[in-house]
Length: 78
Image 1 (cartoon, rainbow, N blue to C red):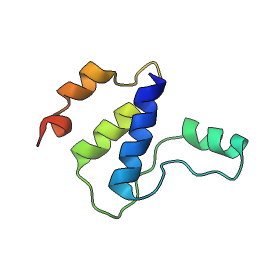
Image 2 (image 1 turned 60 degrees about the vertical axis):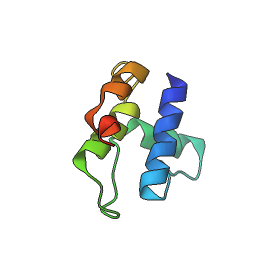
Image 3 (image 1 turned 120 degrees about the horizontal axis):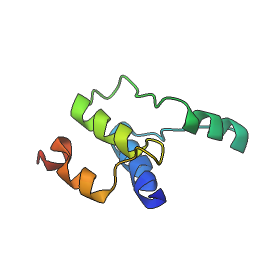
Image 4 (image 1 turned 30 degrees about the horizontal axis):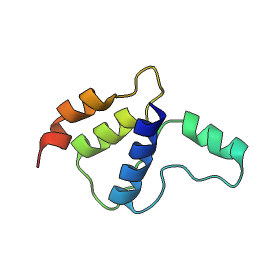
């Protein structure tokens, strides 16, 4: 499941051109990871894409696994 989370970080970076979490030290970084995920306004991204990324970067108990990602509407759109 940590690999799924890491793929979510890569996906976020590919879509938005920056990392989802930024912190100058480990304590700040962990706080930001545990806080609600923020999406930048630019570039404009569909709600379906944001929803999938949000599910991938969710806490472990509710994080999507590979089968759920493969069934996601945005993943299957193209």
